[in-house]
Image: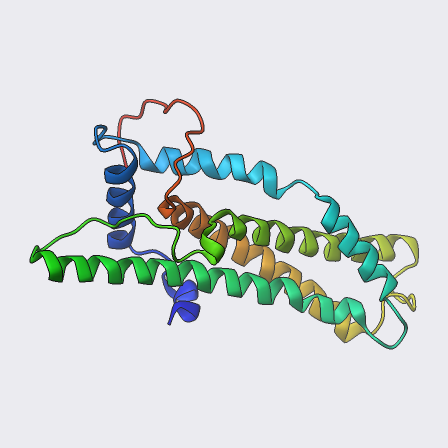
Length: 217
């Protein structure tokens, strides 16, 4: 259910409001007018600086990949599926966290006999109880996808479309389609979903003083 939900409606209005209330009641209960949307946007901007960076292990992955680029193995083609698979896995995990938090709220309402109960932020449902692991996955996905697209255009510019390095035309078209799919899914679904769901961890990292807004979302 979590896997398919990321394509239909990643976050409904009721889910957003419940997650927002749970975050405020846990981290800043005295500021009921806390601008959660602004804080989430600023946090995403800070994490984006990490996402567009390049780490040493990513360069090591590139070296290993180029070493395995043996004639007949079609390494470029098979590797283009890796970002898509990882991205769908991350999206399903984020949706699964929302579902588990909703189940916790339902259990709290039954135990307390109340009509409403707040979402309680927890690291329990994240991989290894560390929310930022998801950010590292997204970082690797975007780097790998960017490398695939950049390497294609470099071969196209240096050797031409009909070069033997390009490989079969069907493989080339598939790689480009997969690259576009990854960029669209990550930009419009996974990154916004990550910005919201990771706020449900137990740690609170203020990014900078909140800007004044005429309407708090």
